Length: 394
Ligand code: CTP
Image (cartoon, rainbow, N blue to C red; front, side, top):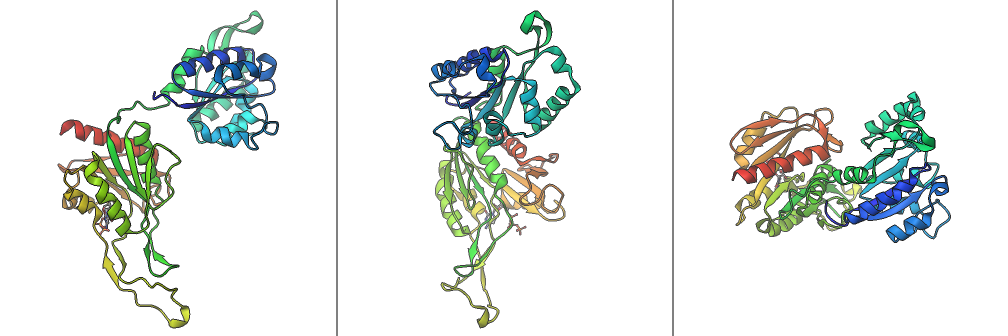
């Protein structure tokens, strides 16, 4: 795991809360920055001063009693990952139901970071159908559940319900972050749809949301690559990314062609307008003047320019087809890309703006691979996996 990961440790009220102090230490020893958020009950088992001393930061204990006017959103947005240890039956239930009744749950709801949950409770509580149903719900949310283990419990009982050991929980947290298998690689990604001005108000555009390109940029960055994202949209909130904002195909072409010879891989996921108004009006076109005649001219073929750059990066293109992927193989060959990622934007779950995508990989040698419908994040990961494979073969 790269040093400097930001981990929020959520502590709820069970006797295992004392072990959360060891977990905080274990995370810090392995290079993470740790901030703690505690429930009221947790403070009956362990003092906030313990966590202040270990982490160097005063824990968040409520939504209103600190200097920060919005501690849950500050923490939630800061986090690369959140771990709740111990997670009591009550906290697990609140989480499963999105019941934002304390600073811990509010922080999780205010975050997009992955969540690790380390339950701790008596065996009877763990075995309750309600607890088991809530755990299933959390797994469905994509949360990672660590433990509980079988062993001595509070009050001398023995059984399932004991919180996992801090080092095992720390392993699960670090396991969330992919290995930096793209460290040392520089990559260029384009995303979003270009906008070609008709007049100062109107433009010719398309429905591209930029989600696929953002997922590509984030995934590469998480895997250690040096990423430049040329986009017409808001990029991901990631200080590690170099984001170049552009609007038109012309702007995008300039930014991309300048960078292309300097990178190892270029993935052109942007939906670039093929035609733009020849002479956009500098003043607003008026309805009273009647329907304008807009003459269009071809925009630069950005991909063709990258293909000719010297040195040439490994080149991945996209093909947004409508109705069938039959034309995509010929397009891959004509464009001379190393990999073409084709999707049918009319297929359910694969359209612009969707969070999922179902794509076909078409490689330079003509071979193809159809991927299942999956999240754009997963598609992004598979594209980079394929890129690494191609690089290892060349
Ligand atoms: N592309 C580009 N420059 C353009 C248009 C498209 O670099 N002016 C890139 C896109 O980013 C994408 C690939 O070319 O990676 C294919 O885009 P697509 O629109 O499918 O290709 P076209 O050749 O324009 O095909 P079509 O006639 O189907 O629109």
